[in-house]
Amino acid sequence: MIALEIPADFDGWRNQAKQLWFAHRPPEQVSWGEASLFGDDIGEPTGQALEIRVPAAFAKLAETVFLHSDAGRLDLLYRLFWRLQSNRQLLEDATDVDVVQAGLLVKSVRRDIHKMRAFVRFKEMADDDGESHYVAWFEPDHNIVRANAGFFVRRFASMRWSILTPRLCIHWDGKTVHESPGIVKPADLHDDPAEDLWRSYYASIFNPARLKTKAMLKEMPQRYWKNMPEAQLIPELIAGAQAREAAMIAIGSAPDEASPADWPQLAEAINRCTRCPLYCNAAQAVHGEGPFDARLMIIGEQPGDNEDLAGRPFVGPAGQVLNEGLAQAGIDRKTAYLTNAVKHFKHERRGKVRLHQAPNAGEVDHCRWWLDAERKLVKPKLVLALGATAVRGLTGRTGSISKMRGQPIELPDGSQMIVTTHPSYILRVGDEQREKAMADFVADLKMVAGLLKQLGNPKP
Image (cartoon, rainbow, N blue to C red; front, side, top):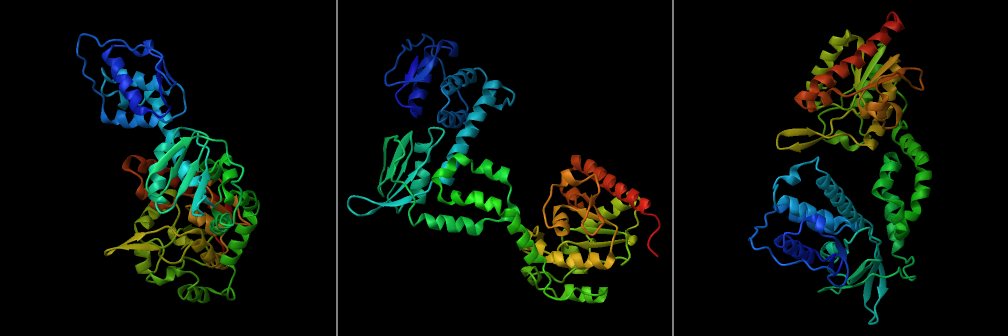
């Protein structure tokens, strides 16, 4: 067995691998381990001089894989090292078993490095000299502590700190990094007043409207919670998320004036709307247009650059895609009422160009009252929601387009909602995907056309 002095002795492994190559020892004749003394005789170099050739990418990959806690990583690295001598393109083979395994180890190590940087929480303590010393506890999966030292030195250069872990402890005195063996978690790392700041900050930024529990647990696994003061709030925040979201939506969509009784009043109210900051940079508000007895209402996201300048919905490139889709589905655009979930154009200016920016949940919720007012006046039987923003404007919640499209969804007022992609999506996808995206879009519109036929003749 070829044993290394310490788990993170990458230079030692690299030197041993070179000697094994010069001695012409293939992977099946080598077993790697970790100990304080070398336990196997490498052997003498062969008489023929052998050149070591590995791509630069392997050195970077090997350094990362070496940090993994898997005992088989050293055998894997030497096997890759050996094979690269005869196949310089080995790492480019995405189907090779060894390459795939190394990639998985790299991903795991990088994730552990990220988690340490994200979830370390320092507690202020006093040294023997009375000076402040900040101490944190972390439990890494892999041998990443030394590799992460530089990050914490750069970020907390003015502090004296220690990060304690079961694997290795690192200490910064303001000038030099020192190391000490890993330890058991000290009992005195309990709450202190500073941790209240973490809890207050986390509670203030927690957005129940954007809560996705599965995604949160993936990014912040529960095993880290015990060392994070703010994690104590998570169960309570999750439990109250639905109630808080409903309250936020109610606040955002609650009327601050009487609901307009007719179309001229509604148009005038939308034109002078200042309920959110979007009105500041837009040329004008863009309300809906179409017959007020339309059986079909089509709702998009927000006005684009062309719509903002013209004051009409769907007159730009996305509108042209919509017109083509409606024509293929046999729907006359003039018989539908068209509007947007948000009435002002949200954008970022780059020189003379105004680049579209998607409205956030709060902006959609503030505009929801206007959309509800339009629906009360038109009373459509069918509502076509183009994209996730339109869905949120109608329901107060953001849903998955792929899961919702393809079937009518009944709304509280008795109308039916059909969900499809926004025409701008078809413009964004590549040429190879555009044909299918358009075909799927037209299929959804044909379903709408079929439902309109089932409703019978238009209202008199």
